[in-house]
Length: 355
Image 1 (cartoon, one colour):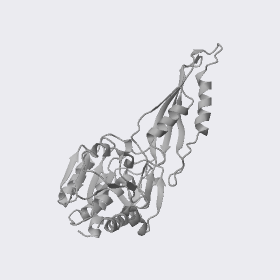
Image 2 (cartoon, one colour):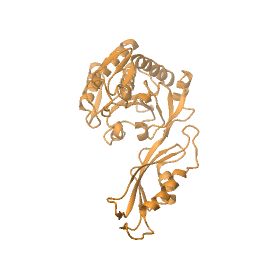
Image 3 (cartoon, helix red, strand yellow):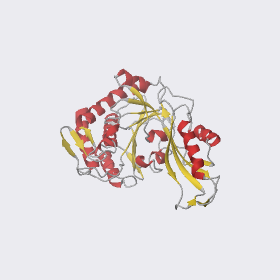
Image 4 (cartoon, one colour):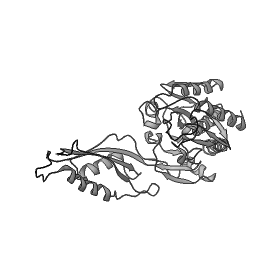
């Protein structure tokens, strides 16, 4: 099948995906659509839960493996939509619909690329495609479930909208629950251990704290207090104040290191990470995949947003058609020519890097 045929079929595939509800944990319908593509193109595949994946026809255990991964779950449409989010409509060169940009355009472009290479022999890399679930909620039944099932992955391209530029690093995420403890009392009585006043000092500390290591690509670790909760009625000084802290971790630290620093230094009585599994990720500057992309004129940058890249333990790139600023927006869309160009550029990238 030539590239123009793949482009046309990929756009039709995306229309079908848009018109099939696929909220996180409810991706049965879109998984079935991906299965149909595999069957229509004589691709041997497997389905685990709502994840659909396949190896290239001439997979060789002695060769390194490249993963092409994107997700087919979506967030729920917001109230500002004026179009039907489940109607795939092309207008003024834009394909509208929920999940069109995040990350349907990437998904169908990677699948078309995998299909292009599926029957080719003598590739330097194996190619594995995985259309996965639950990315929008960092769920356990998506890529995290698939990594122990699929063959070993040596390098990955994660399909997210990057305007087909190379996100060569991505910040990790740790969310902390913290507590400032004081002495509860009646509001009418003296209290020198009011947890709300104590929390003000803690908030000032969080506001001013800086992790010293600054990444060349990702910049500083970003720490933000995002939630605060205390008290139940006006005449009672509460026993504690609950804080939530969102920390975006650069590639100079592991999540464990960030957790240890805050647990040792933060002026709170308790601080506990919810999870340490969403790590920062990057690819070496001398990797052939990165060098191939740069030679094709792709620009590099560090991404502050989280994706399934955080689950991977191997070098990885985030790369795909579409614009991240459109993700989760009302009347979401992707330009049709972005998908066409995405498929062409993915194929050129792999031809340079793995043939």
